[in-house]
Image (cartoon, rainbow, N blue to C red):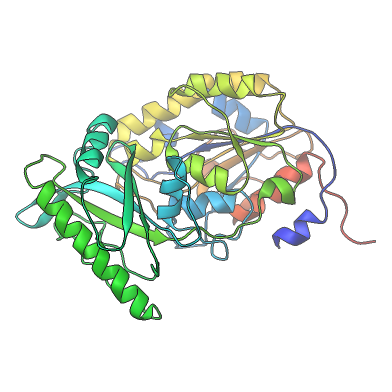
Amino acid sequence: MNEVTFLSSLVTGSRSKMVLLVLDGLGGLPHPETGLTELETARAPNLDALARESTCGLIHAIGPGITPGSGPAHMALFGYDPVRYEVGRGVLSALGVGMDLGPDDLAARVNFCTVQDGLISDRRAGRISTEENARLCEKLSGIRLEGVEFTIRPEKEHRAALVFRGPGLSDLISDTDPQRTGLAPLRSEPLPGGGAAAERTAAMVNDFLDKVSTILADEHPANMIVTRGFAKKPDIPPMTRLYDLRAGAVATYPMYRAVARLVGMELVDSGPSFPEQVEALAGAWEKYDYFFVHYKYTDSRGEDGDFAAKVACIEEVDEALPRIVSLRPEVLVVTGDHSTPALLKGHSWHPSPLLLHSRWERGDDVHSFSERACAAGGLGIFYAMDLLPLMLANAQRLNKFGA
C-alpha cells in the first residue's frame, strides 16, 4: 500500500534527518571469469561495515521483469507510483537544463549520434564533450519551422534537451531513437488516439530532423540526432508538501536535478566530484531534513560495458561514505535506481541492493553489501515506491493508522 494521499495523512511534524544515496545503475551481473558482480568485486569496506549495522534487501523499481528508465525509477524512490505518475523523458531533460515549460510545450530528449551508410554506428557519438554539444546546438538553432519555435540546449556529453512551442502540438508521437546500433534513425509516427494533431506534430518533427541531417552532414562523430520521450509537463503533487519535508537534492546530472525539481526539492549546488557532492550535503545539513544524493557514474560505466571502471566508481563512493555517516542522519539509505550490468551495457530488470540504516531497524545477518548478500536481508524484496514510507517511519515521522 502506498497511495500518496493516504500516506500524507499520517505525517507528523518531526524534523529528523534522512539521506537517500542513489548509486545510479548500481546492480550488476557476475563476470564470467570471476563469478562476481561489480559490487562483489569492489573493495568497499565502508559499505560492507554499514550493511552489517543495517537492515538490507532488494528493490524492484517497477516490478519483476520490468526494465525501468531512470525517470520512473526515481519517481518510485520518491514514493510515487511510477506507472500512475509517468513523466516523459523529454520533460526531465528540459527541466534539468533550466528550461521553463508551458502547458502546451512539447519536450524531447536528444542524443547526438553517429550515422554511417544510413545506420547508427554509435548512439552516443563517442560521448562528445558538453562543449562540443553546445557548439552543435548553436549550429542547429538557425533552423526555421513553419508556425513552430524550438529551443535546443546541451544537457551533458552527447545528450541535449529539445522543446517545441506552437499551437496544437501533440505528445502522442513515436520516438526516432531505435535505441540500438545497426539500425537507421526512425521516422516519428502518430500514436493511436493522437488524431490529426499527432499527424501534424510527427510531420513537423520529421521535417526538423531532415534539416538537422543536412546541417550536421559534415560533422564527425556527431552527424545526426535521435529523439525520444516526447512529453508535456504533468501535474504532480510535490512530496515536500505531501510529507512536510524540507528536501534538498545534491545531483550533478541535469535529468536527476529535473526529477528532483518536479517533486518539489530544492537544488543544492556542488562541484562535479563525489567528495564535493558530499561536502555540499554537509554544508546544507541545517537547511533540509530530506536529502537526495545522486551518483551517476556507476550507470555510465555500466552502459559503456566497462566492468573495471564501474568497480572503481563503487570504490570512489565507498571512500567518501564515512563523511556522510559522520553527519549522523536518523535514516540513511544506500541503493540504486535500477541495475546497469556492464555485461549488458544497459539498464536491466534485476532488482537493486539496498541497505537501510536506522536505530529503529531490527537488523539482519547480512555481512556485506552486494546483490546476493542483500537477497538474504531482513527487508526481503519489495517495490521501490514503498521505500519512502519505511524512511518516514524510521525517522519517526508517521502517526499510527487507525484506533
